[in-house]
Length: 239
Image 1 (cartoon, rainbow, N blue to C red):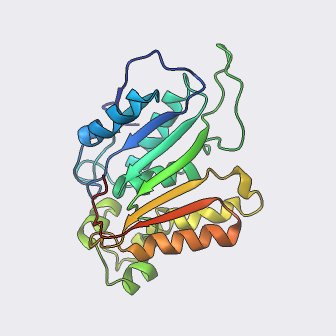
Image 2 (cartoon, rainbow, N blue to C red):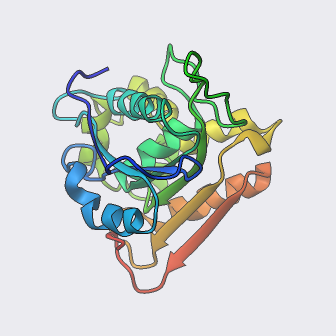
């Protein structure tokens, strides 16, 4: 994991029964930083929620699965102190929080989502993702989906995955990088999947609304708890 991984956290003193809100910024995987959610964090902190905003490796420095690994590392770090973690991400950040909550990067164990672990000082237990909030998230990077949608955000896509989407090897990697493709691992026990809240502006021109609609429909077909709220008149940037 990147040694430069940092998390800005609210001051300690919150009740441990409150879930920790871990915020992950967007920016097409190649820009943005952890200051993006400062006002939102202040809003929730005033209401008693512990919060943190993390910086992950951008595609200008490291390709996939580097940012996925960073988010998983951040969740495990936060879980040393908090029993429940809710992941909140926007756009590319929505994509990353979904991946972290639904599956694990190659060579890593999935983050625990189905039960609350014992939190003894000698055994902090696995991280527990209690929920995922995705704001205009990118749920599906698979070639067929991108082609059907006219290849939106192609430059960002190819920078993240490290090659042309016309390359079969990159197409295979795109499958692994698609949160919607990881829902099936929860088919037998949908209750073990963290519930998802999807928010998407009806006028989003950056990430097609169809991606959130398809994610919601797939969750419903598998019995996974997922709410979709389309925000009338809103574009890509949701406040």
